[in-house]
Image 1: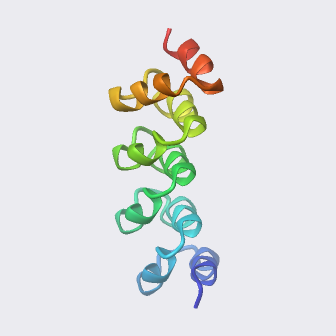
Image 2: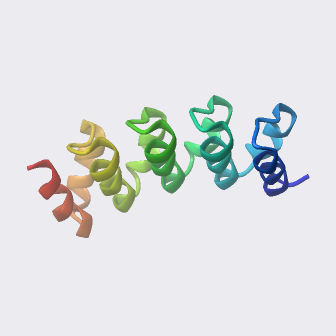
Length: 119
């Protein structure tokens, strides 16, 4: 069974299926969706997979954790767009120091918008 099939089966049943979780964690997208749509909350088993991807780390913090998610911050900090979105939508202000410094040093198009948030 593929991660998509495992996710869809759990989603259609509307409940966790523990035996399918080792399959779901093989894919970051379905790991995020499983936490969001099926578990409807923090899913520790899926976090190592999710924390490897900036987009889904941001979305997991925004939609699932509904707040700061330190495990995802290292990968988010490597992407200026998601760092900016994380500051704007999740933290609603200044990023943690290591992320803040990375954003400022990159001096890209998101830096100007980020500076507006923290002022």
